[in-house]
Image 1 (spheres, rainbow, N blue to C red):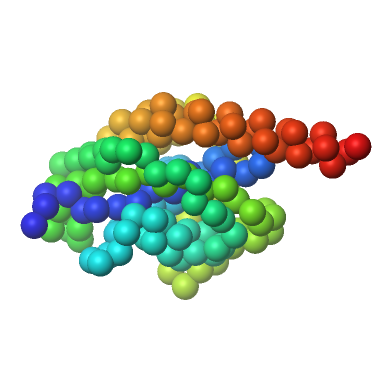
Image 2 (cartoon, one colour; image 1 turned 30 degrees about the horizontal axis):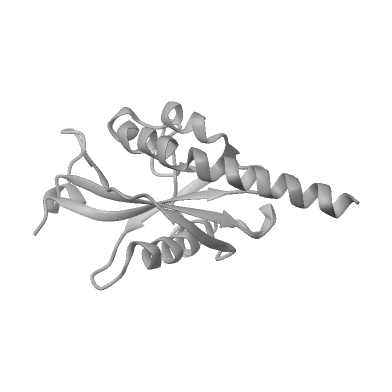
Length: 166
């Protein structure tokens, strides 16, 4: 068994090229992160991303557009006790980029097992500054991997808007 729990983290891009982050509801202080969750046995990272997106933010209005070529691992802090810490040392993240095809009202944090209390759209470059330090390496990698994809999405959406306005 691996020392790291396999997970998928989702970069959900809106038409403006911003990414959804959500504020954890199990922390007293503000703690923002990408939606993420475990990859079940027999499940691909892409399947896990779609499932977790619906479980965590209540929407399936998304299409996968890219998967980062490498996984990134991080260790949980030594003061994190119990639960998953007993079984794994940390998490091994596969980053999955998705294009949001819904409306903001389609995002619903009141899921069966709510994990977040708030959400917002932020620039891709802001991700590493929002996250807890032990996860920062994952978010820095996300910025390097998905900036070209974000820029292409912005270009396509800008052209679509111009063509629709004619």
